[in-house]
Each structure stands twice: as C-alpha cells, then as structure tokens.
Image (cartoon, rainbow, N blue to C red):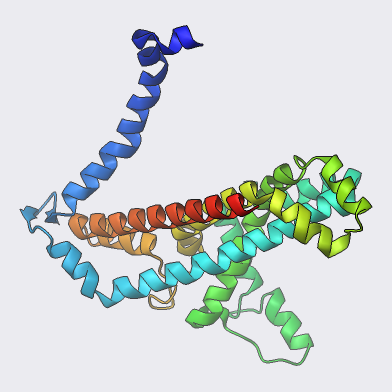
Length: 294
C-alpha cells in the first residue's frame, strides 16, 4: 500500500476519474450558477451584468422569504418525524420482532420504491373534498365531523404534505437506523441488562449513545433531502394554495424556467446550497462534540 501511495502515477490513475467526475458534476455547475447569479436576462433577451443586484433582490423579496421559512419549517418537521418514526421502527425490529422483522421491514420499505407522482395521486384521492369525498372525509362524515377541504388552506395542505412524505420515506430511515443498531455488540447489551438496565433505561443509556454515528448520518440525509424538497410538492399541491406551500426549490424552478429569469433563479440555488452546507457543518460539529462526551 505504501508503495502505491508513493507512486504519483498510480495515485493519479486511481483518483483521476473520481476527481474529474466531481469537478464536472459538482464544481462546474456551482461555479456556473454563481456566474449566472451576477447577470439578469435569458437566452432570448440576452444577459446583462448586474453584480450583486440579484442578491439584494433576494434579501428584500417577500416571496423568497415565504419560501425560505416554509422550507425551514418543512425540513424541521419532516426530519423530526423521519428520525423518530424510523428509530422507533428500528428498535421494534431489533428488540421486539426479531425474526419476523424481515417481512415488516419489506412492507415498511415498499413505499420508498413507489414513484412520487403515484404516491401524490394516491394521497390527493385520500384527502379529496370535491366532487366526491375521499376516504378521510368519509371517515369524518361517519364520525359526525365537518368535511374538510384540505387543499384550500396552507395549514392543512402542509399537514397532508408532511404525512405523505413521512409515509413515503420512513422505511428508508428505519432500515438505515436498523443497520446501525445491529452493529451494537450483544455483549454491551447483555452487560447492561446484568447491571439492571432494561426497557427505556437500556435504550436511553446504552442503545442511543452507541448508535449516535448512524443517527447523525440519518439526520444529515433527512435534513438535506427535506431542504431540497421539490417533486412531492409539485405533484401534490403545486405550491398552493397561492404560494403557501412553495419551497425554495419550487420557487427557483418557477423563477428560472417559467419566468426565464436565470440570474435570479441561480441566486436562489446558491441560497439553497449555502443553507445545506451550513446545516451539514453544524450537525457535524454537534456530532463530534457529543461523541467526545460519550
């Protein structure tokens, strides 16, 4: 191994393809997007250099503010739901179901492989209000409650969107966290039980600390994916009613490709990239501090 690492040609051959791929797929689009953010216009009207004007516009744009806060709220709620539900399911697999967990894992993971558009269509039928009631409104009718037009208000649309995305993605996080839990040595669990730990105390003082690395990885995956939510919102609510459920990604899409304002759209894309980077670094710093304490 040392002879290979000391050979510059071997290092170049091994790392070259990956480096070229990274530069072509990650670095070039980011730099290109940054350059676009300094201009206004499109390929038909032509581009005009405006410097930091798009950044100033983003700072004072109420639609951008609404999209930013919606994205942040959605990411916090969905991440908390995915991690809590996923971890609860993973604990269920390991400590309760054991041999029967394979069937349950398959059933829970099944929604992950479904196309987002199909899932969105399914949930739009579930929560349908007109021209006919969906199953949810039919249940409300049986219970004597008022019908609810879930997609007529931002609050109820947000709830349906969160429920749909949790149902669609929690299987992935359950399996991911399950993979971390099975790596905990049985000797550690047995020793804790001999010392009198059981139930919640065993989970709180042994299982959770020993699964922190995979927990932090799951939080990073979940939060970054939630910040970039796009397809489920477009398929279910199209950002409505009005712009009440419009996240930054959908706002960027509408600005860049429907309004053909590529410069401002690129500025929004840079904002999303910056938020994802800051959140990831913050979680990494938190994980390093907590693991040291453990």
